[in-house]
View (tube, rainbow, N blue to C red):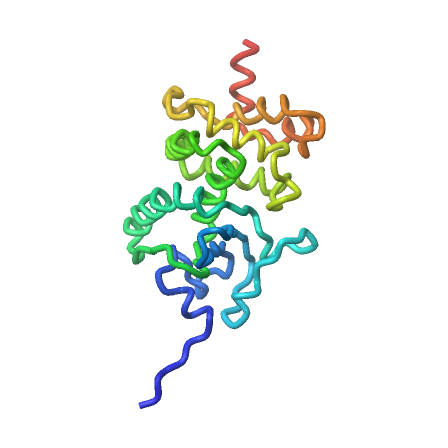
Length: 230
């Protein structure tokens, strides 16, 4: 009997984290190279081509689909990989979806989990390795909705892996998750307004100006400011 051949996409889907191209083509890819000296690439994709998955990631800003959002050293990736696997698999089990696992090569991740993963990666990309446990603890202290919102705002302003690195929202994410005690905030008090202050206080070359931050503020931030004035 002839052995059934699979395309690169089918192989990548084995052990993926919640991504089902039949339901939605939007996803993230985590490319884990075989060599420990090579960087791990995290990219966002709007379409799914199982035949061309191996060449779907790109480093430029000329098009959104397949753009690399973060580049991490293998050592930093290893510091967060198990936390991500455990966190995601708890959610997948709750939804009745089979668990995922990280493997060398391309790892598809569902769009929402990919946003959460990238937010943590942005927090540690330029951080002192000694601060990674703090970033993990603070990331775990955020609700999924907070992670999604912060990712969306950061990606819109400084989402390219290199062009946005260390600027505006990316800088604020790193500072807030590696140095601020997010996990000790008052219950039900939104963490998001703190990011507005951090971005506003960042250097003039930051990609997001204070006016943009004000107009982007969600209702929770507006209510928080109103309470302070009163």
